[in-house]
Every structure is written in structure tokens, then in C-alpha cells.
Image 1: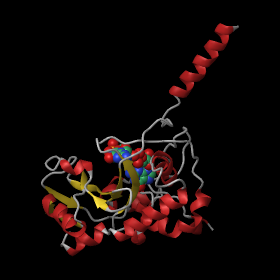
Image 2 (image 1 turned 180 degrees about the vertical axis):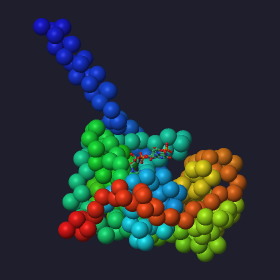
Image 3 (image 1 turned 60 degrees about the vertical axis):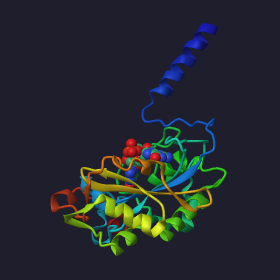
Length: 259
Ligand code: 5GP
Ligand code: 5GP
């Protein structure tokens, strides 16, 4: 009997371990050291869009975002690692319903994919960010509402798109800009060094970092000044190009269109 129970437990364990894209909840992680506000550039992200759906902001046509949007507010450690999925807190969109306008505009998903939640289900981009990163932001945040509200507020206060625009770095499909110039523009504006992530020579993300009281500080990744996570010396900041007719054929109707 005992060996049968052991066998059942083993099967249950293996089923859990191989259930797919499960991000495990880890309660034993120590308190984080600082926050990274990770911003994504739609012009680069949306280049990878192959089909459309109503939740994907790349598919909003002329209303698609033309400025950096939020990827997430991530608690990080000073040694370059980070905690994730710190406790079980199933995302509840109702808790942030009053923030929807701001979230749709500044923190939209740029993908049709449904990311996995910490306990193995599939959910929204916001749910993924809350469960994976937000739950590790204690003791600064203990609930979704404050996590999303504060993230929106610091995003609006530290306007990276505007800083680059003022320095002459505007979206372009022909120009290349010196990476050093882009970093300097942010250093001059916020007195900190950001982390820059590139994809195929284009800026993919810019991360600006904060102490727990939201005073700006250098990101740990910004120390790798020469490598800067795959960025060449001259980088592009691509313009968003709406999908062509063929790809739009696969577009799912939005709620309004469906009426
Ligand atoms: P990637 O491998 O594409 O750089 O990152 C995949 C995911 O790992 C990110 O979306 C994010 O959830 C997590 N991640 C990557 N870099 C960092 C980081 O510096 N800090 C934190 N907290 N998470 C990160
Ligand atoms: P991370 O890389 O943050 O751990 O995971 C992001 C997850 O959310 C991935 O599964 C990705 O497919 C999904 N996702 C949905 N919308 C977005 C988006 O706008 N940006 C990024 N980076 N990932 C998104």
C-alpha cells in the first residue's frame, strides 16, 4: 500500500514538474535590493508581429503606441540576479479596474500570446508581471493596486521617450544613433545610468532603476557599459509600421467591431 502511495506521489510530482511553462512559486527568496522599470520600444517589438488580436496594442493602427511602454517594474538584487513568483497571489483584474485607461495606454501588451502565471495557468500580461515580479516587491507593495498605480506614476514622472526626443533621438527607419549619446541624454536628465537592451541592432528596452523610495539610481546592468546587452555602438529606434493587408486579414475583431 505504502509503495503504491509513493508511486502516486511520484507520478503527481513528475506531472507537475513537466506540466509545461510553469514558473514555480518560491517563498524562500530574500528581500530585493532595488527596482528596475523596464520599458519596451513598440517599434522594435511590433516588427515581430505576424498576426493581430484585440489585446495586442501593435494592432491599434494609427492609435498604436509611439512611445516607450511599460514592460514591468522588477525587484532586483545588487548581484544581478532577481527574485520571482515570491508568493501565491492569483491576479485579479478587478482590483485595478480604476487604472484601466492608464494601463491600456501605457502598459499594453504588444503580443497576442498568453503568458504563463506562476502556478501554471495562462493569463494576461499584467497578471504575469504581477505574479512573477509584483509579488516580490514586498515590503514596498503588498497589493496589485499600489504596484500598478505606482508603476504608472513613476513611468509618467521619468519620461524616457520625451528625454530622447528633446535630445534629437526620434523614431526613424533610416537613422542610426550613437548608443553613448542615448545613454548620456538619460544620464543628464535623471542623473543615473540606464540599462539598454537591443535586438538586431535596434533598441528593444530601456531600464531605469530606483531605490525602494523611488529615488533614481544606476541599474546593475548599466555597469557593463561596453556590452550593454547586445547593443552595437550605433543603434536604431525603428518607427512602428502597421501590418500590411495580408497580415491584417488574420485580425480578430475588437469588441466594438464585433457588435
Ligand atoms: P530575457 O531573457 O528576455 O532578457 O528576459 C526574460 C524575462 O526574465 C523578462 O521578461 C523578465 O521577466 C525576466 N528578467 C530579465 N532580466 C531581468 C532583470 O534584470 N531583472 C528582473 N527582475 N527580471 C528580469
Ligand atoms: P517576461 O519576459 O516578462 O517574463 O514574460 C513576458 C511574457 O508575456 C511572455 O510570455 C510574452 O509572450 C508575454 N507578453 C505579452 N505581452 C508582452 C509584451 O508586450 N511584452 C513582452 N516582453 N512580453 C509580453
